[in-house]
Amino acid sequence: MLEARKIAFRYTRYQAWLFKELDFCLAPGEIVGLPGPSGMGKSTLAKMLAGYLLPQEGSLLMDGHPLKQREFCPVQLLFQHPELAVNPRWKIRDVLKEANPPSPDILKKLSIDEKWMERYPHELSGGELQRICLARALDSRARYLLCDEMTSMLDALTQAAIWKVVLDIARERNLGLLVISHDQALISKLCKRTIDYFQNCGNQDQGLSFK
Amino acid sequence: MLDIRQLSISFSSYGFGLKKREIQAIRSLDLSINAGEVLAVVGQSGAGKSLLAHALLGVLPKNAHLSGVLTFKGKDLTPMEMSRLRGREIALVPQSMTCLNPLLHVGVQIARAAELSGVKPKASWNATLDALRRYRLDERVAQRFPFQLSGGMARRILTATATIGNADLILADEPTNGLDPLSANETLGHLRQLADTGKAVLLITHDIEAALLVSDRVTIFCGGVTVEDALARDFNGAGKLRHPYSRALWDALPGRGFIESLPIQSIGFQNGGCPFSVHCCNRKAQCDDILPEMKKQNNGRVRCWHA
Image (tube, rainbow over all chains, first blue to last red):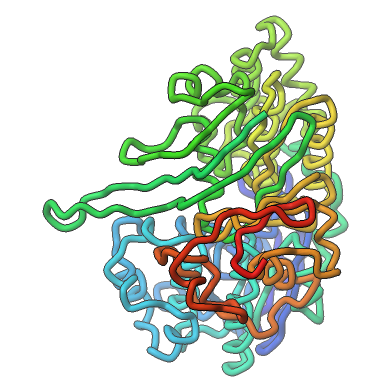
C-alpha cells in the first residue's frame, strides 16, 4: 500500500500551500484516477509520491515504511514529455541500463525494435520514446506506476496501444497505477476510483496565490 | 487563403564518418484552408504536423529540403515571403513552452508580439492585459517569469502571443494540450471567434473530440502523408470516414472503442505505398508499393486505393 498521510506542500515560504492535509492511498493492483485543473499541484503530488520531493508536513509511506533514497524506487513516475526524462546524450541502450536491463519479453510486448538501441533519444518519435521510458520504469522491482499525462502528447491509436500493454503488465504483476489526466473519458475508461481533491479547487489557477 | 500541394520535407544528416543519410519526414502533404475557417489537423504523432507549421514559417533547420507548391493569398510562399509574413500575417502558437524567453516577464513577451504584429506600442500593454483576462489569467501573471507558470498557464500565454495581433492565418500547434476541459474549451472557442471574424485557423491537435466542436474540416495525417480531408460532421460514427486509418484513429478514442485489438507496431514510414497498409484489412499488393493520389469523395478527399 502506497500512502500519504496529511501531507502539505508549498514551493517557497512566500507561496500559498499547494495542498494541505491531503490523504492518499493506492493499493497494489488498483487503478486510481487523478483529474483536476492545471496548476493545482497534481504533478507535484506525483513527484512527491515517487520520492523526488519531500512534503513539509505529514508522511509518505510504502507498506508502512518511508521510501528509501539511493536505491531503485519501487514507485516509478512517467512524465508527459519523455524527451525530458532521458539523458539526451545517451544512446537508448544506456538509457535502458539505468534500471535493470528490461527482459526480452517486455521489449517484445512494447514492440521496441533492437535497431533503436544504437540511436539517440531525438531520433525516436514521442510514442517510441515513451515506450522506452515505460520499459525502464517496468523494472521487476517496480510496484507502483504513476502516469502523469503519460499519453497526452500521443495520437489516439498510439495512446490506446500503450495503455493496452500497461494494463496487461499491471494485471500480471499486480501493480498499482495512478492515472493523472485531463481526459475525463480516459479516466472513466481506466479507473474504478478517482481522487477528487483537486477537482473542486476550481478557479484558483489565476496566479492569485502568488504573493 | 493557404494552399499546400505535394509538400515534402527531408533531412540530410551525416552518420558514421561521411556517410550521408536522408530522412524523409514528410512525403506528400496536401491541404487548403480558407478565410473564416478552422481546419483541424489530426493524426499520428511524428507524422509531421508540427513540421508543417515550422515549414510554413520558414523556420526549419538548415539541413532540411523542402519541395512542393505553397501559396498564401494567391502568392507563392517563398523563403523571403515567409520571413516577411511570420509574426505579422502568419502567427504560430508553439507547441513547447521552451519557446518563451526564460529571462523575460511573460507580459513583456506578449506585448512585444503585439507590437510586431501591428498593435501600436502605446496600446500594446493594455492589449496584453486584455489578452490575459481573456484566458482567465490574473494581471499579476504578466510579472512572472516562464518558470513560475504551470504547464496550462504557459500554454495560454503562448496562445495569447499568437492571437493578440492582426495575423490572418493562425497556426495553433497543440494549443490545448495539458489544459483542463474548461480552459481548453475557452481557448478553442476563442480560436473559433477569430475564424468568424475572417481569419483562418490551422488547429494541430490530438484531441479530436474537442477539435470537432469548433472546426469546419479535418485533415488527417499518417506517416508524412495526408490520407484524408473530411468534413467535421463526418465524424459521427456512421461510417462516413473514407480512409481506414481515420476510422482506426476515431475508434481508438477513450470515449469510443479504446483498446480493442490494436497493433502497437510503429507505422511504416519508409515504404513507398500507403503508410497504413500494414494494418489495413483490405490490403492489396499495390497498397504496399504505390502511394495513391488524393481523390474526391462525398465532399471530401481521400488517398486510398479502395475509395
